[in-house]
Length: 453
Image (cartoon, rainbow, N blue to C red; front, side):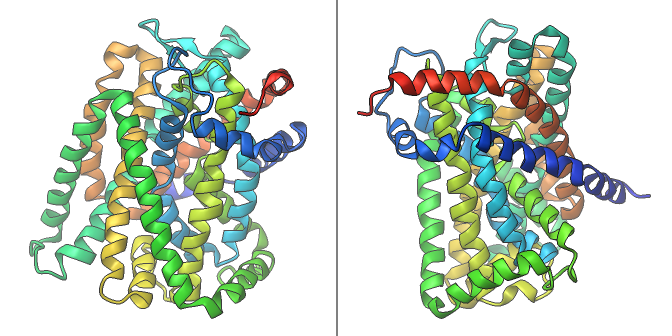
């Protein structure tokens, strides 16, 4: 068995029914247990995000908007462009429906896990307060649960890898820009390596500045990239308006028949949709709580409300737009197995000439902001394990991985990330389910006294 085959088998094993029950069932539990709280206070969550309740004297490093932007920077990325295309390629259009279901429950999961990340912030080796699954497990469940916190940090270290983003950035820059304009080397390896080195230098300039620089850059780039990408896709949908409603109906029909790609294998299409949704919005994986745990606030529930907006923006809006773009242009059944090239085909078909260039710009911004966020997560996991002083060395390892990812095999890269994300979700969800009563009590107390401004 080759290394590539091993990770493919490991990914299939980990993302079996037990893990889907934990993620989807856990999200369903959070939604019902909170009496659909994330949806009842959606307007209040938007007001918190807008800064109406900000206090510069609150503990933390970044404001609510920067925390959500940082978390979205790490989630709105290649999972939304390439990942959705790969989901449709592997599971058919119906996989989009199960991404919606996962995102719906994912909003409740994000509310609980990110509320806990502020509620149970704990000191790192230098005495600074930090948040995330490893801290809410240690502080909320006690020292006896430390093995679970350590397990999360170990797999989180491997999950926070830029190899997928680097790989897909290199592919689209090479195929959409360098080769058509005759700027690529004759040897593809040297082209990929050169692009990887440039990306590594740009990323180093940001991540070596720490969480505050990451938050500042993300809060400026994320809104811009969302507007540019959604605007482009809206234009494609308008040009193909007659196919929009039939495409929605096709997604729903195929979600329960799986005829388009899996020959009626209903269980497989659910797995494909849920797996890609987890890769896209990361609800239940445990990454976003690390970012939201750095928010400047004394109110854990407030940060949980901001965090729950993530899956709504990430999956229900952006992933849906990507999926519709691929389906209505008819490129989804072209046989193209590379996600980013499949999406590029959809853009080229509806917006000939400039469409692929727009996608190129979007991909670079999407992917590089994701790389910023993942760097913070990996450093936080390593710092929990070996201390902040040595944890800072993670950034250099991370920069080297960008170069590795630029010349790696796509299938192995994707499966390594899936294995790590699947394992990360186990301690994240177990800790959150066990501490769920604390979140509900805090929510009741918060909403009994909150006055809407």
